[in-house]
Length: 487
Image (cartoon, rainbow, N blue to C red):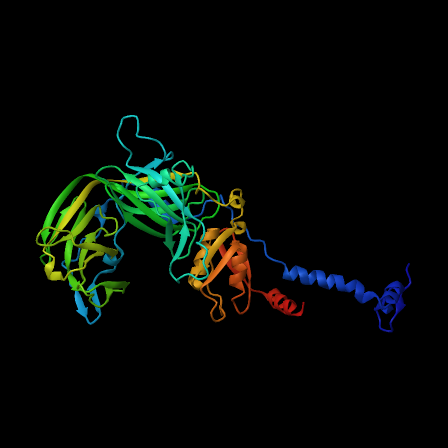
């Protein structure tokens, strides 16, 4: 049996070799690597991974592209409660509504038509496709300059045909219906323009852009430029920098078209197929904001412009946004006066830049058919080479990004890794931190930059089951912050 040297207390003792080791002056040198290794383990960067090919649970994608359910009929929408009243007081106007009228009621199921080869000529039967992609213009960064306005950043544009071949400068680009040397956006890149050709009589109703593999929306902004004839352009600010197929989901109204004219009489209403349209009233001035309340829809009105802008309000059931019809304001000679509009639930508005008493009637055009066209692109052309084989979205290299505020920064993080970002951090950015531009930055580096703006600097952690970027706080964070200050 091994002998132990007792320390004078019953049951306590230590081997002689251990006691001699503790008396030596070198034992701190042996313990120090252990402490440093533990500190480095606490300070280690977390492993962040976002699979570039994993399908996300996106209800928007499922809602748009699920097969039509014959059990869902627009006629099941709640009946209108009667004529609506429009109340105005100073710079506010509101319409008393029931909750169901505020929300609207679903949408009409559309036939989904997929076009996987967007560069094909006319089909064999000789009929033109409903939608054809003529060209794509892409800008990946700003034109060099010291300073840019807060809301607009110009970018050089490279043009490609539908097959991804870059068009040469000169005759090929000049042959495009409308080629731009620059595109101007709010600073989000890639900045893209899609040149589309619609079949005669077709009208584009709405557009969404998805990553075809993950089913996540990848556009941060959309705009539309109407052009001559059946050609138009879709402008988009994308949040996708890696090589992945894209799906352009286009709701297109088709003929034959039914036209009807109305005099603007209070309470005027009519039925168009499964849809019901009713005139609510008008206000002088431009609507600058819409806010729902529990029992009303409130509009914030701006001052009348020099040419006396006015706004006309309508109700469409089951909902205004998906209506298969256009509403145009006309003067006494039948000239169109409409200048855009908007909607919320069942309520929509159309505005014009003339006093309301100069609007004599409206013209309603109803398209009797509609399709949801899905154009599939192999990937966005002209991507940086380093992003062509990326599997982890946190490692995508973004050559240039610009954020105006914290909201922009959070949107960029969510869009670039296609995850939801947990909010709630106490953020304290330094004065004059925004607007801010970054070059050759990855989403991982951007998350680190965002975390450094917080007061307690928690560690990011990916919750794979919910595809959420969360923040982890525990006792190790206290040690980590302290070690970070010491070392």
